[in-house]
Amino acid sequence: MSFEQIQLPNQNFPATTGEVNLSQMPTEWLVVYFYPKDSTPGCTTQATDFSSLKDQFQALNTTVIGISRDSVKAHQNFTEKQALTINLISDKEEVLCQLFDVIKEKNMYGKTVMGIERSSFIFHQSQLVKEYRKVKAAGHAEQLLLDLKALQSAE
Image 1: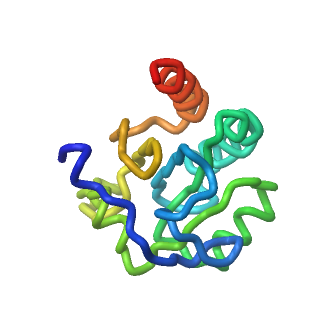
Image 2 (image 1 turned 90 degrees about the vertical axis):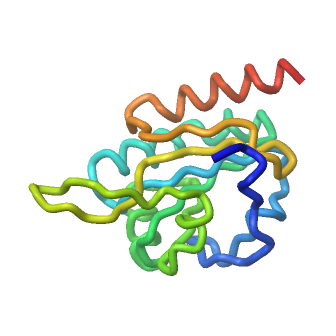
């Protein structure tokens, strides 16, 4: 998939803080990350890492948003339990998952299932500039922060 093919939809999605429209972000930069499930070890690591670095992302004029197929209620429970500071979108209808092509065949305990492949995307002024597939949760938020700094200094 080439960068030009992913356009942020001008559509509201339910999230922990109400509704979010990815095409109308208040910041110049946007990080969208997809993760399989709330309150699982890797997803908790990723969400808490992004939350702990939120101020550094904001200093780079960047909004970070997590997306999974979990319900808003599950997201709110996850946010409360882990003291998350980032917004989480509920994509139960898989509109964003399909758009970003993150639903992949996975092997879970010997069974083949369709699930979200941990993936992240960096947008600058609504244009996709970098994507990450098959992400490992640990250290990923820090790597994104370094990459953002490099992208911004190259402007």
